[in-house]
Image (cartoon, rainbow, N blue to C red):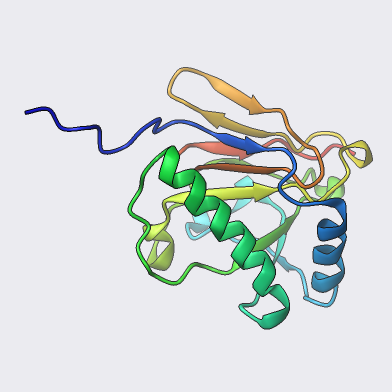
Amino acid sequence: MKFPPMFNNSLDVIQIDDFLSEEEVSTIINLTSNIQLEKAMTQNKKYQNNRNSNIKWLPFSEKYHWLYDKIFEKIHNVNSFVWKFQLGDSNPEPIQYSEYPSDINGGIDWHIDLGNGQSCHRKISACIQLSNQKEYDGGELVVTRGKGEDIISSKKIGSMIIFPSYMLHKVFPITR
C-alpha cells in the first residue's frame, strides 16, 4: 500500500504580490503610529549583533481584527495546498511590525524563526511589505533551500511572502 506524502513542497516560498491594497497598508501604518518601537532582541544574546531593527507588537484588539483574520486566512489557505502542516487551534503569536533603519544598516543576519517558549511551535512565517520600494535601497529577503541563496524579489507595497519557519533566511541591510 502506498501512502501519499505527508508534506508537499517543503522548501517552497510563496509570494503574493497584491495581498494588501495601498489603502490597507496606509491604515496599518496609521493604526500602529501610536505603538512605541523597541529595539529588537534575539532569544540568544550571543547573536544579538546579528539583528539591527526596531519592532512593535500589534495587540489582539478589535481595531486589528481585520488584519489578523486576513493574514491567518491566507496562511491557512496556502498551507492547505503547499505544506499541509497541522496548524492546530492554538493561539497565534501577535503580529510583529519591524523597521530596519538605514542609519544603523538595519537588517538581520541568517536565522530561523524558531526559538524557546511559544516560538518553538512556529511552522509558518510571513512578511508583508509596507514601504514603497522606491524610498529605500537594500532590505531584500534572502532564503536558502539547501543549495545556495534565493533573493525574494518582490518589494512591491502590499506584497506578502510566506515560508516555513525552519527555513534559514536573512534581510539584507538597508543602505538608504
